[in-house]
Image 1 (cartoon, each protein chain N blue to C red):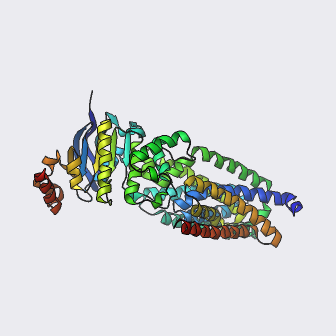
Image 2: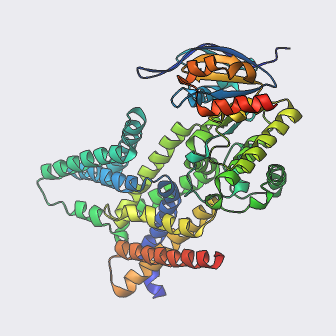
Image 3: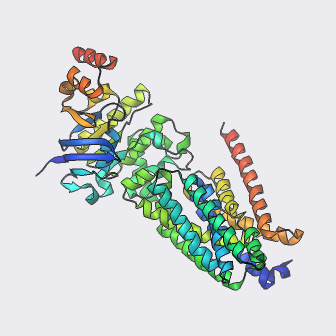
Length: 251
Length: 271
């Protein structure tokens, strides 16, 4: 059986005359955790949008477990967007947002059969007590747990995360990464995570994809977080790179 | 008092007020939550262009205003989708074109154009049976959308991108919403007038937003406020001999301020 979760061939995405992604070629095996890192404007979110079927490539193909993105069911993918996109004026409760993961539509009146799995998943991500607190009253970390519950409730084969721990304190960030790691182990899920946090990428991912419109490195964290790869991707090597190497020596 | 409301013109006015109150406050929740309040005003003024053309052609203005406003609403949506202009700019452009056309159409009509003033300020008491039938048909359509479209519109109102990842046809749904909104506005214009119709869309939904904690709750509360304010406004206007459309809007405004007080009170209770 073909165990390639995401297969990208000769993929180009352009916005008007601006080229966002150029000639991407990669295969991500099922059950892999891939962190996508790169500077701002590198095309990381664009790449996620192509996986999610929100953007059509101008050239090339992308298949998810052998299917084109428009052939996928919404339940094949779990998506955690950046929380900064949330409209906090929208009147909604976490229990409703999580139920969209189950039904792929906004709920009217919640009925009991919906409520049970929703509550179970909220408990799983440590947000059971938040079920009926308005979304606009939640902190960034709490909101991120709710979005994660929304993605996990459909038990997707592929989990797509766009900066899931941005703006969250250290403990909250660790909790979120533990939930993601546990989900991956339990369901052998493929995880694609865009992050600016090199340490998280280094410690949690099986592979790191360094992107700056093109793929500049796609390898294990040890082989990807090299001075050469970082210079190619970011143009320079920052202080955090030193910290990762210090951590590695301690390991 | 009760006898007064048994007269056929008052009965028609009351029913029309209830149906228009229902529709506009239902669509209003999407308008308010999508920050498109200007859309109501824009489409009402687009309706003015259609009404003026109807008057020029010596035909029932409603039948010309409906397609005219639908075209304007499609134009606004297209302009927003196909250019990088914001929706307020798109609405502003179509709004101005429609009003300019309306003024030219009226100027071409050499005789007296009292009808145009009736549409500017509305006249709920002069609602005819044919107007009422159109309003009832449109209300039935609106009720149907509650079952087929409400949850999709709600989802894309919350987050368009998230709705798209769940394969909701967000763009097509936007056109359906805007077309129905255009028709609702044209029908409402006859009752409350071009100038005040936007308030009908915005005030009950904004009041509901202050009270509700879920979008479903906001929808139900908005509908209730839309209907109740129409009834109270019509009765008040009859008792004090005031213009009905404007009285209904002022009743909605009173409810809005009560909702603000309610929200402040419930917030201080939480603290």
